[in-house]
Figure 1 (tube, rainbow, N blue to C red):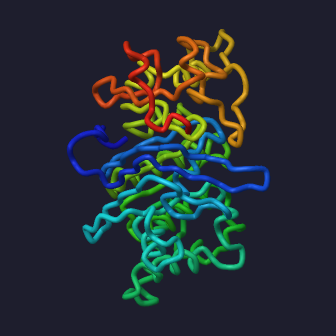
Figure 2: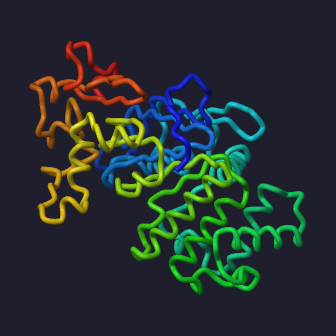
Length: 352
């Protein structure tokens, strides 16, 4: 785990996302998967984005890379990023198809995808695909240098006989080896930010721990900022120093991992933690979160969690959107339970 950094400290972050909004036009209506999402990541820091399926965490990472689905668009906010050259760029204002964005995508920000089998081309060798990544972002490297670099990367991520396995196709590798090769490809351009989107979803339990340890080691040794996207709070506890909890396209709580686990402030975070199996809970029934996640095209008014919350403070919870409340020490939440004057704790964009 990287050293804990308060994202709200005075130092300029590597990445700062502010009030990001995304909308998708569908035949059935408009869907807003991200609503005023804000988060920061500092250089070399590990940050977790946590939430149930459909909360918007993958949409947030896809927004950074500008690989949104068809008929989706960024309608507000900014995504300021510091490049290797020292420029400060707003990713939300760059044409997704421009050479500039293609250079940032993969060169400055890389992603480890959930399904390496679908991320790799089945008709090109592992070497071909990693070497192409090197060629795109380091055109000065000749063929021999690219070959050497690919072998070094495969060796770095723990693939045995890298000189031989480099010429394998992805379907010839086991699931764990494919994910290691995916990590090698993500590291090929020496990115400043590595996004890991549910990186162990398709792997056996015994392989998951090895892959997570590899990602943690690479992040630490190479001093790369890590954005870990997961629904698994158990993974977050061991992998990151700071956590953002998302629900229905909004960040509802953020804080250092110790604070989130030992003193959660939002009812949703507390409910997630109660649903995690522990040694102490072996003889107890786990507590599932009551109710179902509302549909993204029919978002509830007020606090997005009020339809499932067991700690509502009154009508204000389903009539108004709570604003972010600073709890001190880098810990913050959006909940009316943590303000004395609740009418002053209304989000500016109250209509979502």
